Amino acid sequence: ETGVTQSPTHLIKTRGQQVTLRCSSQSGHNTVSWYQQALGQGPQFIFQYYREEENGRGNFPPRFSGLQFPNYSSELNVNALELDDSALYLCASSLKFEDTQYFGPGTRLTVL
Amino acid sequence: KNQVEQSPQSLIILEGKNCTLQCNYTVSPFSNLRWYKQDTGRGPVSLTIMTFSENTKSNGRYTATLDADTKQSSLHITASQLSDSASYICVVSADDSWGKLQFGAGTQVVVTP
Image (cartoon, rainbow over all chains, first blue to last red; front, top):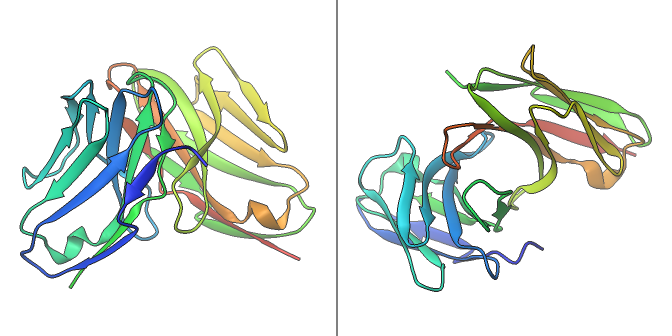
């Protein structure tokens, strides 16, 4: 176990709804990255937070947004859900943004 | 176009046999390359990490090699076990990526008794 936890484990939403996914980073880690992993594909980088500031963003639309809190836990928010948003959402924490990332178990999101 | 290509897409091996997975990348400037193991429905777990100056790194029965000149890496699994059944993902970090990693699609390995 990496010490990174995510909630919920599974989630079912309908198209157009909004969703919030949560991540608790490993103790002492100040960097959190979020990834979207479609079935049979490698993870795709969404964005990264370092000390509560967004530190980089992948090729995802603005309806994907995030937050990092003072305790370094993080949220991923997705508005106006689309069917293609169905995926495993992974968060990963690290001590600094260039260090080895430790992944949580993921949240499986299904959009109907 | 994905900057990290892995092959084969999947493979089946008998328990106790060895196998080698390949990773080719075009990410530049190169910072480091990592191999992760991902069990079904779980998050990836780091196996090895190599920088430009390293050409081999071992972690138990897993041995990774890196040729930064040809931009190729391999992961060799020795004496495979049933628990090695997983997806193995090659991840490359660019020197200016500020932590943004380029992931391959993974090689799905199935070890059969």
